[in-house]
Amino acid sequence: MNKTKTLSKSHIWSWLEEVIDPEIPVLNVVEMGIVRDVHYEGDTVVVKITPTYSGCPAMNAIEMEIHKKLKEKGVENFKVLTDFKESWTTDWMTAHARKKLKEYGIAPPEDTEESDDFLTELKGSQKVVPCPYCDSMDTVLQSEFGSTACKSLYYCKGCEQPFEHFKCI
Amino acid sequence: MSTFDTIPNTNQDALVEVLLRLADDRLIHGQRLSEWTGHGPELEEDLALANVALDMIGHAASLYGYAAELEGKEDEDYYAYFRDDIDFKNIALVELPRGDFAFTIARQFLFSTFSYFLYTGLIKKVEDEQFRGMLQKHLKEIKYHLRHSREWVLRLGDGTEESHEKIQEAIDEIWMYTGELFDLDDADEAAIKHNHFIDVTSLKPEWKKIVAETLEEATIEMPDDDQYMFSGSRQGRHTEHLGPLLAQMQFLRRSHPEAEWK
Image (cartoon, rainbow over all chains, first blue to last red; front, top):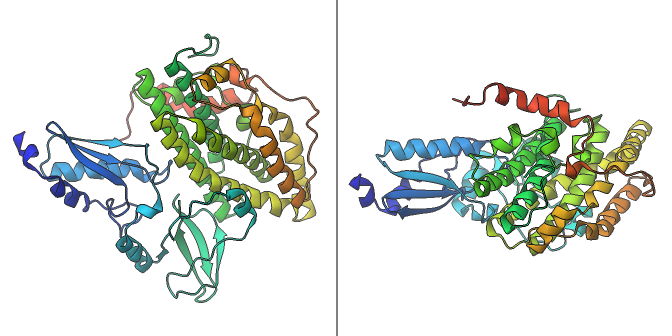
């Protein structure tokens, strides 16, 4: 029992970095910005996570993976809480994570701009997403929704490849 | 709270009632949309409708989860699986059978436009941190739903003769169920007092403006508001369509209430 207490928070963070996002297997849950906080409540390690998308079916799997990892590392007292107070944004993804996404063939999210005027934007044109393979700007949106909740589908006219874009939220 | 209880008067009861009403709309809508999975007109739309369904059910799960925490229930499943049709407070619009693709899109557009204004208004008013956090999260996703459905309204309306006819019919058919979006009852009034809700009647002009502009661009005629409008769902008086939907959604869980996914 006392063993838990002696673990530093940075140990916990580094172990959490070993937990991989099941739907984007090049990123871990810390880089994704899913793990928001690690702290102690007495002897108990509390890990706070927040979902990327509300209905993201990977969240349960991620929670289970965190459980598995902490048990594997010998942490005995811990709990994983889901927190909704802050809403996840792609801005929390590290630059390194974005680079890895691109190398994996997913166009990374750009920084979100808090647009006050969504309704005007609604009628305007879509922003350009460069192709992650050939960097061509000659791409077209095929669907706002892709194989997972967090991605949309694009097609690159430059290299004639379909690709996915990590949506900015 | 069930249907025939008195108006919620404590702060918590008022909040729970708002959470359940919002969640019921989203769960039932999500269940209807999920019926498209594997049946979409093309792969991209199959994925899109399944994604929107997932978002809707995700929104419902977080809202129910918070209500469960406040009411001391075990989890969100209680509200989804163990209440009867009369306890559900969703509006009729979301429980109507999915119809064809045009009908599904028309409903999505009208509902998402409303949700956009409702959530934008709520975020400004709501003081409860946890609730506001959820609203902010959901709104980001609602914007995607609105953009997606609006574009399809345009494409269908301004498309072929057949697609035009279908989307026009869908809008005409749905219109009598849009009145409920702006109904305000005693439970809403109580929630407004506690800063958990806003006066939805005030959202109508903005909603109508976006709808009118979109329909005009899509060459669809806007139906007349001066017609019979369905109401009463928020008090548990539903159409005949909700019962069968719930039966399908709930039967497995009710048959095996203790079962767990392994």
